[in-house]
Image 1 (cartoon, helix red, strand yellow):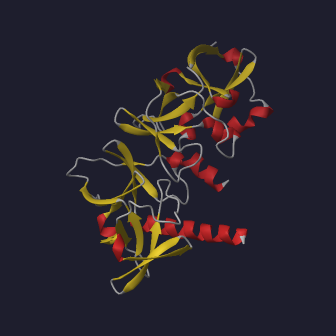
Image 2: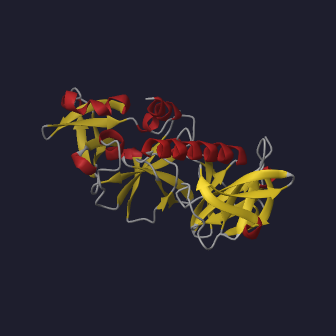
Image 3: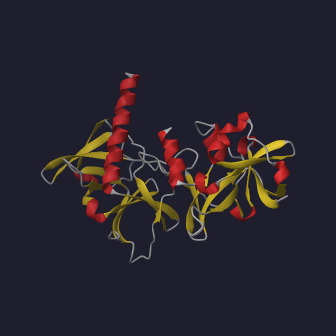
Amino acid sequence: MTEISLYVLLVFDGRYLFIPQHEVESVEIISDVKLIDTSEGVVGWFYGHGLESPVYSLNDNLSLLLEIPKKRDYLVLLKANPQPIGIICDEVESINLQKELLQPQELHVVMKTPTSPIRQLLRYQDKIACICSGTALVKYLSHISKQLLNSEDGVL
Amino acid sequence: MTESRAWLLHFAGGLKAAVGLHEMSQVLISPTLFEIPTTPYYSSDVLIFQNRILPVLNISNMLLANKKTIIVTTRVIGVAVYQHESTEFSQYASMYLDGMPENIMVNDNQICDLPKEQKYWEPFALSCFSYHETAIPIIDLAYLFSEEFNAIKHRA
């Protein structure tokens, strides 16, 4: 198995999330997102690459936010079918783990849950960063947005 | 009669259990903890120990609570050492403790049954002994921190 070295670092609310670069479609700026009143946790849509992509806003707990905090300046589009899926964040950076001599560590089994997108942890600056695969993160976003929809149904 | 040393561990909520003398590597007082999202409520923190990222297991919450209801009042954390196979490298994980571990002597005459009211220890108790008229289970750390045990928990 080839070890992945190139990652995109997403930062939001102080949470550091690494995603393999080959699973990222593109990085855009927030002004290109058409913001909407949220439904199913979607805070906006990005029209690009000939497709409409739903845009999500997450907090440091990886829970869906129904609003966009002020600092969110960037949009990271993750590759997904049938269309890319966007996450807005405060900062985005491209990081080569090998070059930076950073060594990810597997998430311990006692910390795993069936729906968690986190696969590995990494010491980065003064934080513990989480490493997710793009596919797992897309699946997780779909899961929590469905959960939100169901809970809203429950209230109604 | 075989006699050996063990560590008597105190956990929040009045729980007590023991591990072998060489299964407790160190006790850390107030280490820096990092919360990891989308993890189980009883195992959501990590710490850095000798360059490794270790999970911090809250046994009391795992055994007694369905939610984070048992508040850990101390910041004493025990670093446990275990091996899945005798040929494998030692592995580390940590646990919240409710005070410093006690170094005690245990002999064969102290062996007793695990009381009915403490059956929650059963899946990972190697055996049990009586100490000051209290039944103390001996924790099978390798099983507690195994893929097998943690997968069963998620299916339950």
